[in-house]
Amino acid sequence: MLPLLRQTLKEGSSVSILQVLPAIAHDFGLSQDQLAERLPSGVQGVFHNRLHWAKFYMTRAGLLESTRRGQFQVTDAGRALLATKPTKIDNAMLAQYPSFREFMEAKRPVGAPPAQATAAIETATSTPEEVIDAARRELDANLKAEVLDRVRQMSPGDFEGLVILLLVRMGYGQGREELARALGGSGDGGVDGVVHQDALGLDRVYIQAKRYKDGNTVGPSEINSFIGALNIKRANKGLFVTASTFTKQAREHASSSTLHVVLLDGDGLADLMVRHNVGVVTRSSIDIKAVDEGFFVE
Image (tube, rainbow, N blue to C red):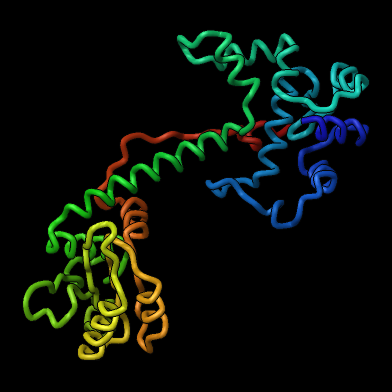
C-alpha cells in the first residue's frame, strides 16, 4: 500500500493501476516471471490483484479517491500520512481512519465479536481472491483424496468400467459410449479396455487398468507386459491406469518404448475425475461479480 500511495503522489495527477504498476514493480525488483505470475483462477495477475486491493482499501480509508473510471489520486489525508514518513501502511494503520473502521464493521460476519473481526482484517496478508483460491484448493485436495479412497475400494471390474467412463467423458471415442468398452476377464489378451477413436476402429487406444491399493506400486514388469500386449494387438497407443503409483523404473520403461504409452496414477486419475464430474457432484457454487466498466462509461 505504501509504494502505491507514494507513486500515485509522485505522478502528480490522476492515474490508473496500469500506469503506476511498472514503476512499483521496478522498485520491488520483480522479475518478468514474477510479474507474469497469475492467481490460481488464471483471471488476473497476482501483482496487479494486490495493487487493486491496496488501492481499494486505501480508498475506503480516504487516502485515495476515484476521479473517473479506473482513475484515482491522493487525497489530503493521504498527503498528510506520507508527510509523517511511515515505514509501511497496513490494515492496522488504516483502522485508525473512521471510514475504514466502518468498512470493516460492514464486513463482520453475523454473530462474530467486533474485536475478533477487526483483528482478522488488520492482520490479513492475502487479498480476497487469494483467500478464495486457497480455500478452493483445500476443498479440491480434500475431495480428490476422498475420491481416490472410494476408487481404491472398487472391484477390479468396476474400476475398469470407471476408466472407460472417464475417457468417454473426456471426449475419447468421440464421447460415444458405444465406441468404448471394457475387455477385462479371462482371454482379455493383456488389456482391460479399448476406445475406438473413429467409428471404423482404424484408430484405437488400448487400456490397462490396475486398481491396486496405496503403497502397492506398479513396476516395470507390468509395463513390459502391457507393451507386449499392445504389440500382439498391433496397436501403437496404450494407456495404463492405476489408483496407486508407478515406480521410477516403470516410468522409464514406458518413456523408452517405441509405442506411445501413457501412465496415469491415482492422483492424476482423481484430478481428472473431479475435472470431468465423474463420481462427484456440484454441492454449491459461488459467482464472483465485478463492476461493469462499460455500464458506467462517461
